[in-house]
Length: 296
Image (cartoon, rainbow, N blue to C red; front, side, top):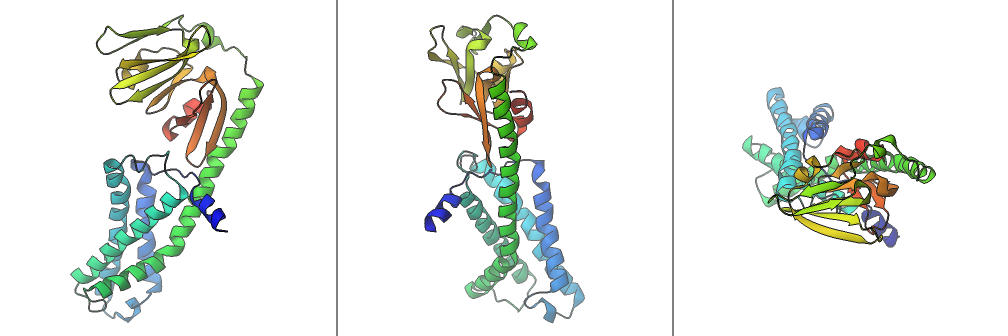
């Protein structure tokens, strides 16, 4: 039983990313507590006779969670990008994220009560403990449902198309595309200094990886062995030098030759591209999924 729980907690899970696509979560974190508290009046809210004070208190409880969500995703995501990286985010990470969010919301709720001079919960450690308990009780079931729903939806989204692509790639491994015949004979990738360069055929390129101010060009030599060349340049500048349709950006740190892909796998973190002779699969960001996976 414990091993099963441990395995579940270590399952890959898609990390939160910065952007406007988080607005439904931000809006929901405001609307749900307001409606729940206004309709059901849990704990001691039903004892408040002043309707204006009650509405002010409930509005304060509903105003805090959106800012907490923005802080946890948008701000901490920028401060700790490695923590929020998709490679290390698991179900356990998601649960810790939700627990931290509940703690932060409890702090905001406690401040709301204290600032409005309520005598229901004193401004003490005991009072904060009560507020944390109230917040956890109200948030528990929505939080659990949210984690399970997101996990189930992302698994369906990323595992089913991957199986289709695996079949397509297996059935048509040698099919020659018209765009391949009109591609340039050689690629010349120049470094920023204009002197260092890598010359290779597009078909032999496997992938290009960005690392700080450098890029690593991984390609296949005529004898079949893989070779790595380091160039001082950004991935965007290297990408602008490539005019081959089957070499595309699959991640903010990777360019990939789709003709080298023999399998596409996927889980809740996203797609993975498996390349011939390359040990580690390449990640596919959500922003590049459609143009990369469907094209491969």
